[in-house]
Amino acid sequence: MTQLECTYSDRDAVLVAYLYEDIDAAERIAFETHVMSCLPCRSELADLRHVRTTLGRWAPPDTTRAFSFEPRAASPAPRAWWYTVPVWAQVAAAMLVLGVSASIANLDVQYDKNGLNVRTGWSKPAAVTEQAAQTDAAPWRAELAALQSQLQSEIRTQAKPVAALSPAPQVAMSDTEFSRRVRVMLDENQKKQDQDLALHLVQLQRDFEAQRQADLRRTNQLFRQVTSTYGDEIAKHERQINYLLPNSQR
Amino acid sequence: MRRRSLTLINTALRMTWSDEELVTRSIGGDADSFNQLVLRWERPIYALAYRVIGREEDARDVCQETFLRAFRALNGFRGQAKFSSWLYRIALNLCRDWIRRQRRTPVVQLPEDVDVMELAAAREPVESIEDVLERHDLTRAVEKAMAKLPEEQRTAIILKEYHGLTFQEIADLVGCPLSTVKTRLYQGLAVLRRELGKSDQ
Image (cartoon, rainbow over all chains, first blue to last red; front, side):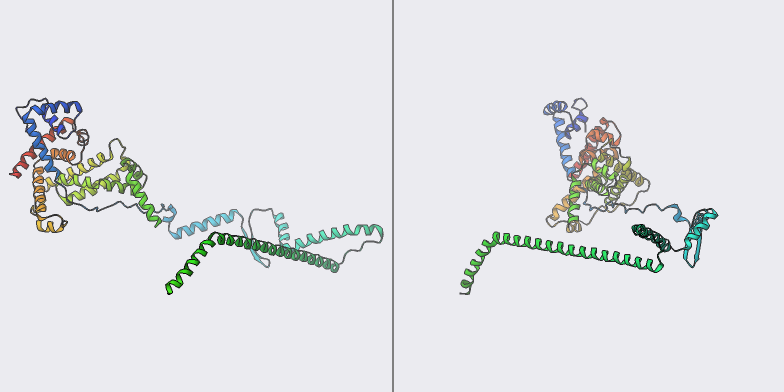
């Protein structure tokens, strides 16, 4: 209640600002000076302070925390539109795509005595015939033919000096002889591989043995270090135990 | 064990962050940061709501709704005002809505007289029955006196008295001039002085 006796400028606002100490310094000092000489202001200030004390004792009832925000579970990535298409439509579309692709690629599937043969691409008829002729022979035949021609050329090279010395006409190598030579070469090759393998094994064994010896030396060294470090202590404990045992038995 | 320690460290770290930092991280999708904000401001918001509307259950609902709205509108928080002011504004708007609803469709209030013995039994054993009675009487007296105030005066007193906002902050929050805030406070306190004086007698 505004006191009629007090004529302080903007008194109610200043009083409430002073009461809550939300006032600038100059205004506070000025009002403090006024309050000292103004009984109504002093009285009202005391009453309002009492009100504030009473209000300060008003506490809302306790509440326990009733909620919290949980991180949202990672939502699955939005599904592609085609997941909404029925399965039968997906299968039909796949078949259509396959058919179109096969026709574009000129897919040719054959299953005959040579097994399954899949061929794609557009080819000229002549080329197709040539390729067909080549594919009739199994790949190993071509390789064997190449090997044969290579061997024949090598043999001819080796036989040249002899041929130069003897003017006798060179006799073509028989199939038996050719087979024998091939077998010899294969055997030699096999022998060489076996030797290489044996060498590798021996080397491996040596390396393993060297590593084992090194580890053994390192272990011995460590053991010696540990013994020298803790040996004194162990001996001391040993002496203590030896001393305590007879005494405790006594 | 290591995972638990990490969680504890993270929680401790969050407690040192400012509201604004927590808001930024919440916007970035860190729900724990928002939970830290809830933990920090839940009690003041609940207290504000309780003192404005005077009903425990409804105050709890308002509190929860305040944080829900804040969470939803977090992207819109630009940081011009303090986070707490923004939160107070949401809570006060919700309180106003609640008061308006009450005026339209007044509900039957709970009986004023609570079972004091039951209340005392539920309290800590260190609190005597006399203390409980006194506190109960005081609470009733303050609540009755506060109920006499117009909403604007009550809000101003609550924000100043219990939440320590400056006059300027209150003015910004409720959208009125600074001098009006002071006047509302003075008039409200004058009413309380009179009403509480009656109770004392």
